[in-house]
Length: 120
Image 1: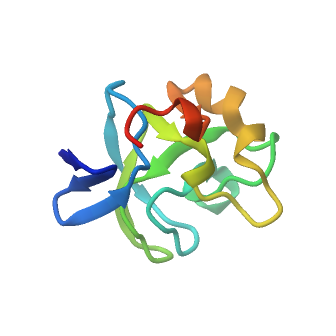
Image 2: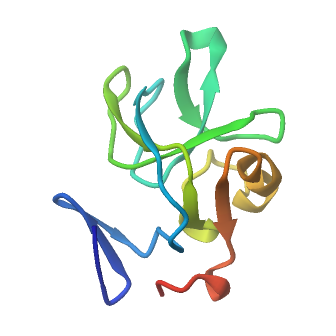
């Protein structure tokens, strides 16, 4: 991964300052239950064969941050751990990343206020 002027590049995907620090990022494959954009904060929907969907509410335990665009029912990469700029993660409409901070922290996903992130 390279970082230049606040843009993180992973392979051929450029992510504008989504990554907020050096905490290790563990990755795994996930199956999307809906179309997901890179940076989507997701939960695992056990009622939908364990597919991941955009985080909606504190009742949904944070599972990962999507590392690439993934179409519904396709498999793609997600970060299971890491530090991310909270205002840049994607959550479901009507939801707020700040409400996910505690659930994310329990999975070693740290959502930071943009003013505190070093990769700006």
